[in-house]
Image (cartoon, rainbow, N blue to C red; front, side):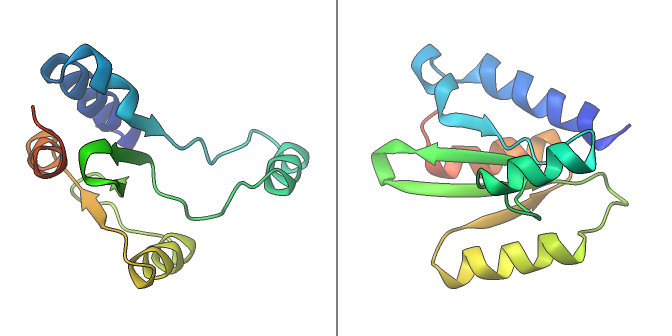
Amino acid sequence: MTEHQLQAQMVAEFNRRVKPYQRRLLSHNHNNAPTKAEQARLTRLGLTPGRPDLTLYAGNMGRTVMIEVKTPSGSQSKAQKDYQEAVEKAGYPYYIVRTVDDFMRIVSQYIDI
């Protein structure tokens, strides 16, 4: 299974289990452009290398939670590790998830499902 397939399963499970209004609290961070020119354009607009795959806005807690999806054998790039370090130094939670169950366990810490 690819990371994209795993992430799609996570998002589908999230959408199945949360209240309809909560579906807007999970957002995909599109960080891969098809060309170098598009990557440069998006970087000028604020794209940040290493940004994790998903952001969860935990409204009632006023928290932003960063979630990186990896397959069981996947590993972070240097840019992802650097991003994680910066986010955690700023006081935000950052998780690496490898299964749908782990993902939903983390989500349930931040929003009622």
